[in-house]
Length: 436
Ligand code: HEC
Ligand code: HEC
Ligand code: HEC
Ligand code: HEC
Ligand code: HEC
Image (cartoon, rainbow, N blue to C red; front, side):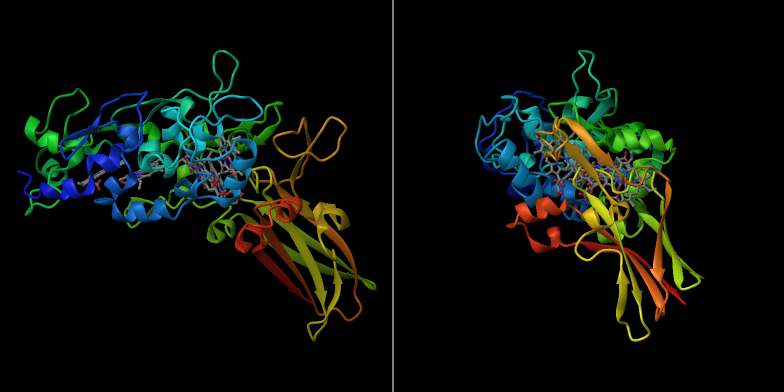
């Protein structure tokens, strides 16, 4: 039935696949070109063969750049608090334990308890296809022993792929459509090896060729598919670093993460999953308007920001921040007034939406060492905030307000000089102008 058997021989040579890897979780689930491979070690290129568009979307996402080998910002921190991502047996310096980072940033490596991330594509690919599509049952991040169970540890894993619909239950002629990918070539659907009860759809011989068993799992359509990695993470002193999940609970939203981060496009759930690195996504975050009113020789200027998201804006990593710039212009475009010269942090703190951390003495402290939250002036879920200014009216023709997004605190931009310019530069994500 499978005519082009050799296709898979070229794609999945055993040497390339198993090179340098060792299995502690020896689930033998996938079969490729007759070779059995644990499902969590199946690389994303295997899926690309048929899911071309999704592969391309994923490849451009931060999920595909999530390891210290590929993400310069994560890489800089990882080198500092852990060490070399190509070495085996590296420990998290502060705790002396296996680096917790990998539970989320390279979950397949965490399942194998390895720290040598270049040993297999399934590790260096970070949050890859199988990292999400084997998450079976969400247990939450609060373990029974009071310790947090983060990333890979927050779920039971399956040796079968998990799909949102479980199309395998199609009956009759419809079933034939998903059974054969290209009818004239007679390629079999690799997910149809067995059904949920283990009953074979294919002959034993065909299953030996290519078998990527898949079962339906409705929780893939819910926020549970994201929260184990995106809920919350504390530093060793119990200070929250990321807390998108807590924010989301506070927002009391019924919208799922997928409804915004995986919208339907061209008939499939989009896997680009934009966030702080994606300008198009950032531009949708906030309703932003400036209004002016003349009061004698002054202008009353109001800048209104409405967070349209069920989580904070900015959300995520603690160093994400946004700020508002306001300028008053003459007819010729000369700047007559502005709300800050260099940076609003000191000159106009209300225009700076930021999360900071401190040590015991109340001095600013970096994420790994902080013992308390300094301030959290990020926009809360659905919050509307108004910034008011008094501006001398003389000669003013228009007032313009601009909203800028930054991946990093100003201090980190200075510290990490080696980072590429586009990761350090403020990004304009909204603007509004009022003509007088
Ligand atoms: C960060 C987690 C994550 C990653 C990484 C991921 N997926 Fe998905 N995928 C999902 C979720 C969640 C859904 C369900 C979306 C829904 O139905 O709302 C899904 C849906 C799908 C679907 C069904 C699409 C549809 O609309 O019918 C396919 C096919 C798929 N993924 C393949 C892949 C492939 C191939 C890769 C790797 C290139 C991949 N996924 C990577 C989480 C992920
Ligand atoms: C040889 C072709 C082929 C390969 C390789 C392949 N798939 Fe699929 N996959 C299909 C077909 C065909 C369908 C069903 C039609 C559809 O929904 O697009 C499907 C559907 C899916 C779905 C949707 C299931 C649902 O419940 O709606 C997911 C998820 C999925 N594949 C994940 C993967 C992942 C992950 C890999 C790699 C480990 C992979 N596939 C490799 C052909 C393939
Ligand atoms: C196995 C852990 C894991 C799962 C499951 C997961 N993510 Fe992620 N996600 C990450 C990691 C790690 C990053 C950060 C990558 C980086 O910047 O180094 C990330 C990045 C992102 C970003 C981009 C952030 C940026 O800086 O641009 C978005 C948006 C996102 N994830 C949304 C989702 C959604 C929605 C889901 C559920 C459908 C999901 N993720 C499931 C681990 C995960
Ligand atoms: C109503 C649409 C919407 C929903 C629902 C939504 N988000 Fe977002 N999300 C956004 C927008 C817009 C941004 C960009 C602004 C920002 O970074 O705060 C974003 C940013 C992010 C980022 C980027 C953080 C970073 O460090 O770059 C992550 C991670 C994220 N969301 C995760 C989630 C998770 C997890 C859920 C579900 C619990 C969710 N989002 C629900 C719209 C949404
Ligand atoms: C609970 C899961 C989880 C753990 C554990 C985790 N991270 Fe992350 N990390 C994320 C997610 C999700 C993002 C991206 C979205 C966001 O900002 O929330 C991220 C983003 C980052 C970023 C920003 C990357 C960028 O491109 O801007 C850095 C730096 C980072 N993590 C470092 C670390 C380090 C170092 C460790 C280990 C000490 C670690 N993380 C542990 C989930 C985790």
